[in-house]
Length: 107
Image 1 (tube, rainbow, N blue to C red):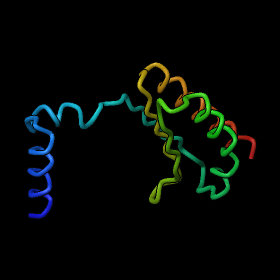
Image 2: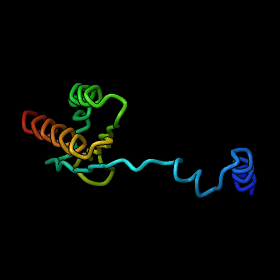
Image 3: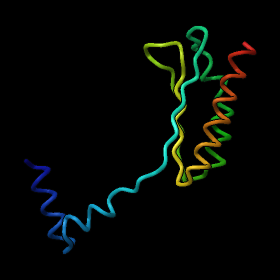
Image 4: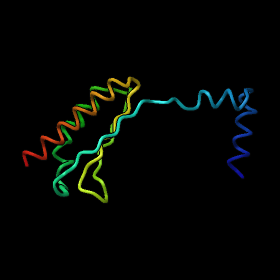
């Protein structure tokens, strides 16, 4: 109930319609999600990938984000990349997937 009252208050203060405000509230960003299957759970894999992840984040600047996490139920890691440019998101994700696959085979 309180959230609804605050929303109405924000609409009144802005002097714009809720429809107009909602158009500017969120921006859709292309997202790529890939899974990397592991032969077994590997708790140290994310630590070994930290330099690759940091490099990828630096290359994207503030135009995207990266989430790499281990699955809680399967022996795999999930690599998710969002970027304003879909081709960049795909390229960065592919690079991280390749790094993860290399880290698995060299371990």
